Image (cartoon, rainbow, N blue to C red; front, top):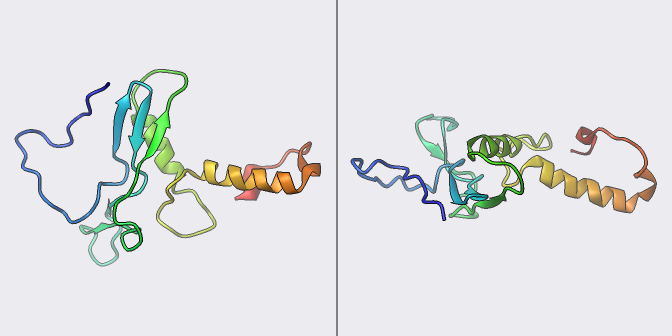
Amino acid sequence: MVTPTPLLQRTQTPSLSNYPVTRGIYLPVDVNEALLWTQGSVQGVHVDNPQNNVYKEGALKPTPSPILLRRFSGVGGWHETCAGILGLTKMDWNNNTLYKKLPVTLVYSKAFADIIQQNPNMVDDIYDFRNFM
C-alpha cells in the first residue's frame, strides 16, 4: 500500500476552515488506484469575496465523497490523470454549474447508450459526440 503524501508539513499547524476537502485533492490508495474528490470547496469563485471558499453542494451533501480511479495499463503519477478528469467535470454545456461529480464523458456516454437502445437504426451511422451533450 502506498503511503499518502501529507498535505501539511509537520511544522505547520492545521487550522479549521469550516469547509470540506478542497476539490481536486487525490489520494493514492495503491499503485493502480487513487481516490479523487471532484466535489469540495473551491476558492476564488465567490462573487463578493474571492478569498472565501465555495462549496456548491453544502446544503444538500455536507461531506463530499471521492470517486475511485483504477488504472488498468500504464505507469506514472496521478497528477495529469486527475487534472484531466477535473477538467472533464467542468465541461457540461447543458448547465451553468461550477462542476459535476462525474466527468462529462461518463455522464453523456450513458445518455448516448440509452438513445441508441431506443433507436437501434442509429447504430451504423457516425455522430459527433457533442451532439448528444
